[in-house]
Image (cartoon, rainbow, N blue to C red):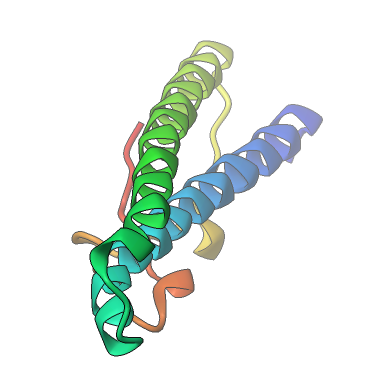
Length: 117
């Protein structure tokens, strides 16, 4: 394996891990947004208590959506460079992503949405 192939494999590992981390963070924030009203009710608090937190989580999700789009754009750019250089990166276990949408659950850190650049 050439130095170029080794570097490309390292970049692929890093960008794929960044995408998985972003998807997991978005799923956790979505779970928080979903559960805040129920937790507020369980604590016996009125709606005004959770509203600032709900608004903040919504803003964070909006920011994460933009960041996710930027990561996907970076992945596409890196894939184009890879093709131009004729570098092949074999997809190994670190690049495996399950198919299907992410669903908030207790094991979110291990669940990702397949991204294709």
